[in-house]
Image (tube, rainbow, N blue to C red):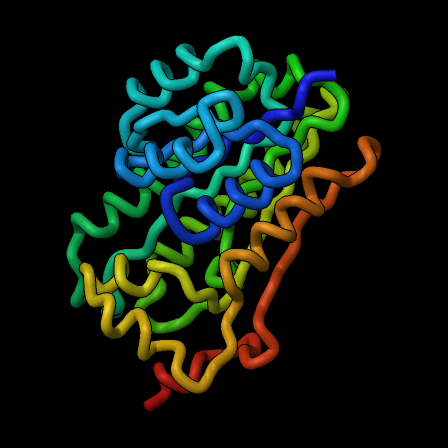
Length: 252
């Protein structure tokens, strides 16, 4: 039997890169997508073109998604798991002290990106048959509101509900759908949210033991390898140091 294939959006850092490593090291083929070509090429060089196929792709551009999926070589078809990982937050200020452009980018990435990628990849998942799965990255921000969360939190609430609705639409197809909802995690997330403040990205987690990308990769591995008749609807993950309440840093 051919090695199973996972398609990962946002595979150049954080959850996506760690998940690519986890699957490539354990017998799966990986289709890695992202905007940073140098990082995609480094990933492919590490595991070889027979193990990793890369697609330079911006999820806010439907034409790039359609072309990237159409050009997937036969050796990486069908797709057994889709990991919709691409997403971002921009800005920390509450309304009305926001930048409307940030809201647009979050909607285009976190909502429309998930919709377009899912639409294009679904035929490849259906071809994989029983046991195929979709894992959509939501967030605890989709459940727990906080000052400055505004459109980011709303976009992740959309991801959760979309996952449930998609699950209903796919009834009878044997495709599983999960909303994976992490809490505080140390990736490049805070640096992106603060427009490139990588120093803050490091100090933000001082005194905490956050979720690491490898923790999420292990969770995605577990989800993709459940028995074929099992669907995990949602998983909410927080580090022990975090509780479902407004973070202390925002109460100061």
